[in-house]
Image (cartoon, rainbow, N blue to C red):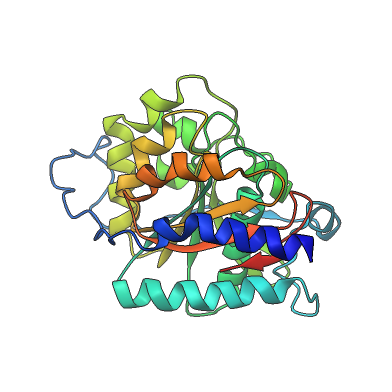
Amino acid sequence: MEHIRQAVELRRALDPVIEAPQIAPSQDQSNVATERAEHPTTPQFKVNHQKLSLTHLEASRVVAHDVTDLRSKSFDILRTQVLQEMDRKSAKFLAITSATPGCGKTLTSVNLAVSIARQSNRKVLLVDLDLQRPSLSKTLGIRPARGLLSVLSGDCSLADALTEVSIGSLQLTVLPTEAPTQNSSERLTSRVMASLLNQLRASPSHSIVLFDLPPILPSDDVISVLPSMDCALFVATIGTTKKSDIKGCQKYLEMTDVLRIIVNKSDEAVMDYYY
């Protein structure tokens, strides 16, 4: 009962965020020049392939690939609700963030992406934009030689930075971040990043792009990219997320359309409550 009471209190604290006016997806993408001449307007991407370890996924609490696991049902419900709203809004970019580290945003990102990938009519790309503390690769159990930082540095094309991971017959495309970086804000606000986002939006290769963003409060990284997102999910955790943290996030969350507030019981849980 105590967990339920705390979840309700968090939900009430977030009410002003949900009721904030929705902001339409940004349409001003024409002023950014493409950084690499070989990139066409609507590129088709070729990717590297890696098979994921089921043992590692279980240890990382990635469960959405297993329809027999009852824990995957919450992500399937969330998937259906989110996709219905995104389809209605013609949205493509979905950001997932939290107030502070340790709320389970990356785990939510991975499980939701895997759940979406189980639908044959959806092609999903999962992007690690948490440049200071990238963790998608660790969660999935991959060791990419190239990724987002290589693209931003001009060392490789976007096509060469993508990794297609497989879980049985299920396939998911990932744009990982290879290592932590300290100049994350400068990279996220660069012309190359703007060009990259334009490429991803224009490409027909993926119908949904999920971005695992940094937490909002520790730095200005989220402020740099959130206006480019069509919509967002906000992850909170009972015992970790404070009401003061939530209030500190509200003005930034108003930069986009918050579709759902996900409330985890603890950072050890996959997902216990969502709204």
